[in-house]
Length: 412
Image 1 (cartoon, rainbow, N blue to C red):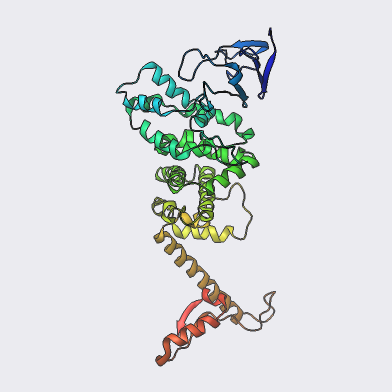
Image 2 (cartoon, rainbow, N blue to C red):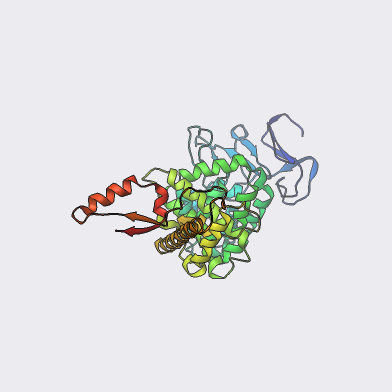
């Protein structure tokens, strides 16, 4: 290498070496292009890497200010030119953003820059890393989600930029690294991209993300993600909810409830986690409960059948064959659905009490294992005096056992 080494950084299967002269070298596996040589071939010997600016052109920086950092299959170089604060290469600056927004038709360079930003989870996270001189506490969120959300909304409103954005490769590549992700900021950024709220993104991207987060994300990253969900601003939390809710609505609208039973379960579980996070959030940060309502349920699910499934599986252990039961996720039901479920469940409960009463009356003692000394009352009776209706009602309701409220009410 012809000189002293100032820094070494190791990835999963590759290594970066920064020489004291400022020359960068890389060796190891290059299957993901992580060596920076422009191809996917590996190298057992250190190979020189040409440093370029994020905006293009060869970099001319003072090597003493350079720092290297390596991810699983990615690399970062930090530098502070002149007296400016250090910023990672790839961070989106306001000047570049305004340049893109003012273009009527994008040129090849702008399209390449935008494609590069959306190409990997590392580049997308780096584009919105918070600029701070104060060291962040462990577990602190280091990306500016509000800024990311605003930028995405601005960019995707411009036709030529919208055509330049392709998130599919990014999502597919997450499949490879999701099990070893330690800091899952990318899963907070993606739901703020409006493209993922559209029907054409459900099957190949949103459902893929649901599987990754629910089944493959390691416990440490999942716990971190849940903690971050509780601290989201209402506008960002709403976008997270809408992405999963829109995917669920798409499946219901297209009659895919039966064929995509596992996928529907995953979406409901993720919405449940967001609902818990929303309840833990402060009163100012909470989003309205109606944000979780899935209106398509009322047209796609028969309440009577869902309540039957709920009652049947409530006494049984779930298996892979257990169907989707929406009664288990009441937060996605609007008021009309909740009233229907309540009335159906109340009817079943009252009828079961009536049946139990008839059996204890008709059958001789000892027929049942519990051998009740007296038959269950089939009704919950309130005996009221006309001059004191309200007083008698509240007095008797307050003294009644809670189990009585499941029975049929009779007022005498």
